[in-house]
Amino acid sequence: MDFATKAIHVGQEADPATGATIVPIYQTSTYTQRAPGEHLGFDYSRTINPTRLALERCLASLENARFGLCFASGMAATAAALDLLSAGDHAVVTDDLYGGTFRLFDKVLRRDGLSFTYVDVSDPSSVAGALTDKTRMVWLETPTNPLMKLADIKAIAAICGPRGVLLAVDNTFATPFLQNPLDLGADIVVHSTTKYIGGHSDTVGGFTAANREDLHTAMKFHQNAVGAVPGPLDCFLTLRGVKTLAVRMREHERNAQAVAEFLAARTDVEQVYYPGLASHPQLELAKRQMRGFGGMLSFVPKGGVQRSRAIATKTKVFSLAESLGGVESLICHPVSMTHGSIPKEERDAHGLSDALLRLSVGIESERDLIADLTQALA
Ligand code: P1T
Image (cartoon, rainbow, N blue to C red):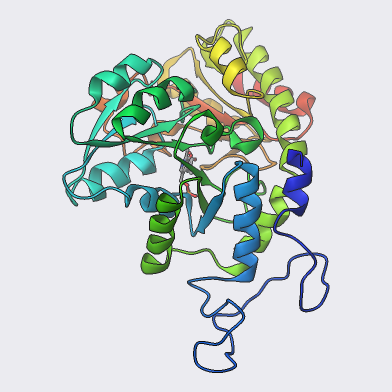
């Protein structure tokens, strides 16, 4: 089955109880048993819920995964994947990543005895060079948030596999429509479904996928034991959103390419970061590894942080907000918003400028988006 068909049908057979065509919101915490321990496979909604199960099956199919698990947020999904590690273990991590992920690693998991080394994953040899005999996981975002750097998943999987190091990929920016890390050799895929998968900025959620049953079983144990599960209504909304992921991504990409080219042509813009531009140093990898370039881009206007903040305040169609991947366009000033939890020295060290602006390019009219940026840059 092709992607667009799977998004609409997998896990979403007519409801066995009523024939409802759309998976119902099973807003129940518990299930009546015929006799103690005798039930229809559903016993308690932290453990299993039919609306969540439908979403898990659908999203797993989109990642070509045998198994999928939904969580209350992208961070909860990330925490479940990291729970595969134990005190004393080491992970190698992309040096450019979502600020909340850095905060979880640096402020929570380090306290629990894990250690992390941050490297520029656009060069696979820097990943190889950072491995130690304690390394159990490599954690990638590709493209990265917010600098849009790519990691060669296949090349890094070839480094990790023989050493028994797990490769986890946060696929939030690319979406399963554009990239399937498991097919390229990754062991675990993580998503913030809050973003493109939900697509309408009305839910917070997360997802993990794996093909290895042992990894799935361990993350499922964590899901039930810790209990950071999404409610049935959020699962319903996410499932409704994912049905249109394919059509939305095509529009996001068309608009993002146009906006990237518009910005790149301006003399008052210093740099544009978008994998679909000829100036992106990894355009060839993007073409090889992804089926498109996505809807996210970042840029550094000339004029320093003051001008950047002014631009972010002046846009009208682009809302000044955290998050991404919804149908509406958003503008963000990462260092004062999404990436504030990364210390300035670390941001400077890996090239995250204080003046950087990030755009989540929505699916409004291209003309209106470019007119909005034109007036904000003026
Ligand atoms: O917000 P939550 O659903 O918990 O997802 C966290 C997360 C994980 N991974 C990536 C790549 C992300 O971008 C995020 C969340 N990011 C934002 C809120 C943001 O504006 O960048």
